[in-house]
Length: 406
Image (cartoon, one colour):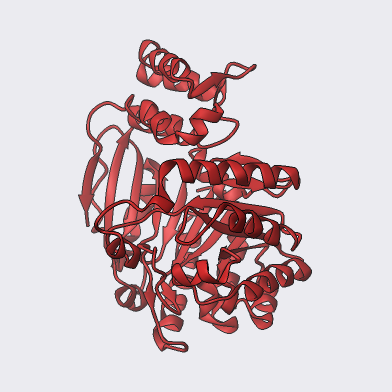
């Protein structure tokens, strides 16, 4: 297992666009402490079983992990840190990234914090249902940098009330804080959200595809001029500041997910190990190469669980051929694309004729180009029309992915 993800599903309030596994929770609710203690126990359980051997990176996401408070958060980070020697990221919201929380993160072994800023315009923040203000966001970024953590910032584009000028201002504002990493996401209006209900009658002009593309291109120009290069479809970093954990997701590194709504990806051997602690899990079908799991137990059930064997899961079982197609699809999210070695494996697993036809189609459509070393990388068009490129690669997968619940 190369990476560990732990999910904290608690927030001060639910944002207008959020369809993640998270719930508005009153400050100090004992459930948060019980949940964090259960997550820490399961991290320890996974380590003792050998599931975290070779783990290099960790990510504590949500929800809002910093809403747990300094003591509870520090305990959970301390449980993760021994298994994450290369990088340990904690997601934060500006309103809960207090000085004592920063001290707790540093003391417990976190190396990186990812702050959900989204905008530095007060009206835009209010339209998104965010509870912090612009000054609070910029102060949180600056304090994180001053504390010695690697600091990343999330920004959202094509949102209500946003203009070209306000978008440029948000980019300039966060860059002024000296951060090393920025992730830029176009707003996705999901059905079961406040924004989804507000705009149920049609797609709003502020979120049109051409607006999204223009804002993404503006971000690339502004961030590039400041020394942050795009290394993934939505992420930019100064030299040496790319997120190793995010890269693991796009390069087929197995990872374990712990927490309500958390997803993981295991090789067949690690899935067999997990079944020793969770015998309710079905045996992997013959030919399984990769298993994707999502924890479906609710937050209270998770808090009360003695270990991973008490949880419920949704599962997907991928064959070697399906995993090879998935690796090509995910690799196309990276600016550098995929290497010749991965293409060679895909040709062995899927057949050279099929893979070469997909590569030719991607090149013919202007979505990808050959690398000097024989690999394949997305073009600028492939970056902006990523779903078309990803679809070409995933269509190589034969059959239907087998699904189960336990």
